[in-house]
Image (cartoon, chains in turn green, blue):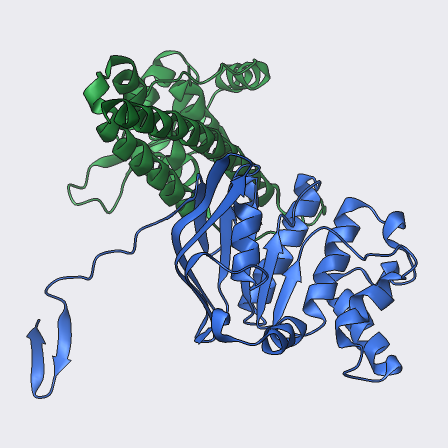
Length: 190
Length: 243
């Protein structure tokens, strides 16, 4: 399972920050994880409780509407070593949890038409998602002058596109089976 | 400007006892400066779609128009002229003979249009544009996959086409070479205003395209056009009104 603790901890290690600003950075850099807006505050409390981050310096008053104090956080040595441990740990395989899977399992014979519509709609959604990933190219991935964050973002998009491809291939296979079954059953009726 | 417009194009093949629908009312357009990519698995109809789009095969129904001209109404010689000058077809097949050096192969479409020297100069310039001028004295069998792709692309480009149609241009390339080739296609669209249409069996290769489609079992799927905005403010003589 994805560890939100380590994700937020990594952002603090990258650069000390306060809650709202960390939330923005989470959204900018790791928005594809789909984490909720409030997760950062919960995680910061947990990390502080575990001595992995500490408040840094006096509280400053930011330009927020309510004028609430901003607490800057920095990582402790304990936090850094925990982050390094996580970085070396093998990743878990993402779980398959999909509403369409449940519908396929529970479908009745009369549902084939609806399933076909949904399968095509899902494929369209995947195309839409791929469209959202399209970007201007980075010609060179190996030159030493090319900043690593740019290369890393290409690699992340590569993973997302490959995953989408897997989903689309599967949807197309499902559609093939549904089409064949639909035509077989219509011939039977005739 | 609309370069290429496929409108409700269908195509069927008969294989033995079976009739296979390769394209089912497929529609797409490519404008000057567009980079359009189509994803499909093996034998999913990609090559047929690309050949129909390039005017190399005729559809069973529907229309294919290049710059507003219905390709089915063109004579054989008019179509040949389009292929020689305006539409660059890029596949992975390479030259028919391994005797040719790559600079001669790249210059083939220009033979008869210019003198030998000019053809060679233009061929070298096309190869330099793609970054494979060092392959000019080599033969096809000497080249690696990425070089073959780049040479074939130079062959497509040498005629200074307004449309490039590519069938699986990234086959056999690793991520680093693939990024280089696809970035090049993107720059042909962005900088040279060429319309680029390619089919690939690999989704990450589509990440630099302006528009993407999937093709399977004859069905070409893209992102639907957003519905026209309602109540948009438009200019009326004498003040702004809502429509």
